[in-house]
Length: 417
Image: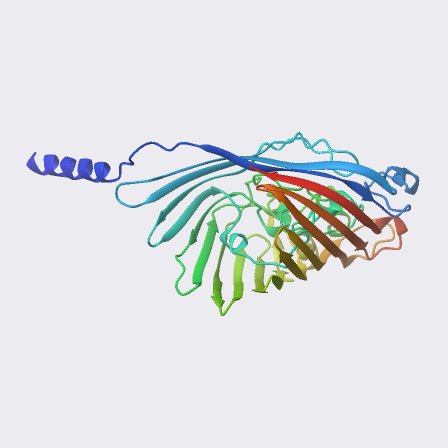
């Protein structure tokens, strides 16, 4: 009995030590960005499998307005034992019923996770991008349309049967599905990061800052070439067509300043036990006297002998279904007071398999974006952004409607709150 009382007293003392001075109180933040401008698309391009070239008329040069709105609920507290606990829920504040290329409804929650931090680092549990994405560096960009995480494909549209890769889509492997991540404290500028998701075959992820491109639903017709029973849309990396599996990844990040020169770098790898998908990433940014140069590389490798989940398909079909390929970007930016300007380039090559007449079996589609951006800070939390981009989608096909290119010129006002 005495031991029971002692144990109870110890648990009570531990619980008391972990008490916070007051409960967590949520604050509201987020941003609202409204886009307006012109975009041109090739007259012969088609954007759904059922279209004919004549139905591309509404994708010719035209004026368009779109938006990107997020409302975030954030709170944190520090326990008496020194451990910090935080919570964040990010939601879409827009109905997202935009014209032309963006017609999806509100997908509600974008992220929802809890953080637990101490002198030994921070653990992140819930719906959040993986740790490698969190610490990643890429080409600097100040424009409205962005680069690797940009909104350019919502203006110059991705055509049907063309596969493109965008860093915020599920083609990375699971987007923002439930996972556990950990980031160590920085030691002389060096930190480590790791993530583990126990089952990426069943999670549907938490949404996107930009809608998935048409290639994610129309451009992945594996069935015709692989004799499976699937239909178009088969083979998303986080889809049940792959069965179930886990994913883990780890990497290093570095950030430091020497004599006015700021250096940020990262390198890491992730292994998904679905289609044996392995990702390698690296990024670098160097800044001095207002100038920043940088770039990033992301390889998505799939073993040619890998099996496509329960479908039993081998080789090239698996590579295509798992978005095997490579993305990279490079750019330079200059900022002086409230003004900033940037010039960047993004290139992606993504494997695909098509059975439609005119397509070259297993091949690779490419996406190129040349981006000129500008930004002016109007006041605290308010910025005006401009983008003039040239976007070129190329596909291995004899059908002229399966490629597209065009110029966009858009203005955006962003309000952070």
